[in-house]
Image 1 (tube, rainbow over the protein chains, first blue to last red):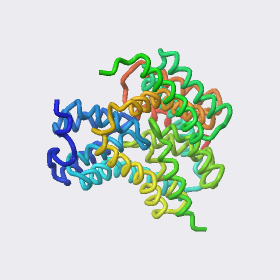
Image 2: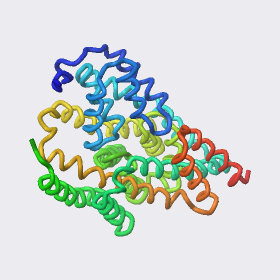
Image 3: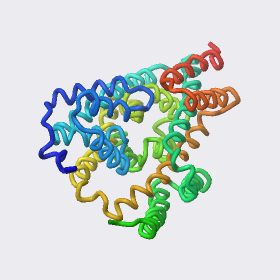
Length: 194
Length: 175
């Protein structure tokens, strides 16, 4: 199909206000790290601003680039819907509710001093968050855990960061380059390129 | 003691490391904010990160709290712009060039390579985070319980984070 039809230049022109409102709703309701599901529901199902194929394409771009997946997809979708102003509106909308909330948290946390109950609650929150992020990561990596070369690169990365205490940027570039070389040559060997 | 330039530099740098998710940058976030600049303690960082998991939207909004703690409203604004501005610009540019990039051998190789490397970085971030947040048997039980529940059910994780707060008050509150 014509993939180019969703490019920024000739995509649907949706009003900036509507884009902002839609992403503000996502930003305010997507609790628990499932922002991608909310994004798909809003963009593909509810408003039909993009089709499923385009959404998967935006997701693929969003998770290849640095930056959070959710905000990257918001920017990409906003750009296709209304150019740069759409991208800014989408980004602002999706970030605003969480940012305001965490701003208030920061102000409260800075203001108070003696607060044994708050500290106790936060100790429980942080512990719960450990379980949450570990479960999220395992779900995200489910397909990788059954492939021996994937597991090798995962372990190598973890050992470099947690055991050898090599800073993340070096690990990202070093192990990343190794992995690109490995999968690049593997793809060249096994793929039948049309 | 104007911390704004440092905040801008650190959070732009961190945003470039969030490959696969915010957690990938956590070890560097800890190194920069706690060890290098001393903007907050490891315990405060873990607490704020935990609270951030209960906030709606993209899951790294807790950086705003770090900005507030360090330099008030201006700090929050700078952190937000530094963390999301450059990566948003990059996404915009690459998004427009994508039809020319996708399917090329090196694009395919990079995409494929980033899958395991980003999972590895996320896991490493989890372990770094756990080191500060899991401090005894009670916190271990809370973390393990949430983990198992989330793998077996589709409950909204925000509820579990709130439950963690209540359990924390009961278990650790001596007020």
